[in-house]
Length: 160
Image (cartoon, rainbow, N blue to C red):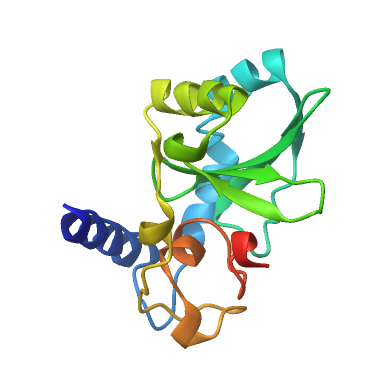
């Protein structure tokens, strides 16, 4: 099943970027203009303090900092499709990738809301799969599904 999931994601990446050697980022402007996830963001705003931290120069996802009185998280919602990443901001300043198996009760609520809005929360082993794609910030040998779907950063956020 994992191989099939990775194949589906690599086909999506190839389709959206149109060229793996010279990627076309026009889908980013279209996504920003259409605000496809605004209904989900309204739901999160009713529960958490939310800040848009999307960097349009590097991100191919909408990135939001969610916080309440006790915790902070970053959710990333891909502009390529209904894929999400949830990161827990730890007191040390490091980020921890969250999945259903290691989620705190509040994180289970976030995951539930994402799933209710049809998002698939990708697991670490899928996010770390290498993909052939020429990006600006990430060395070619380091490009993996995370960078292609969420953010062009050479070091994965949970490994920084």
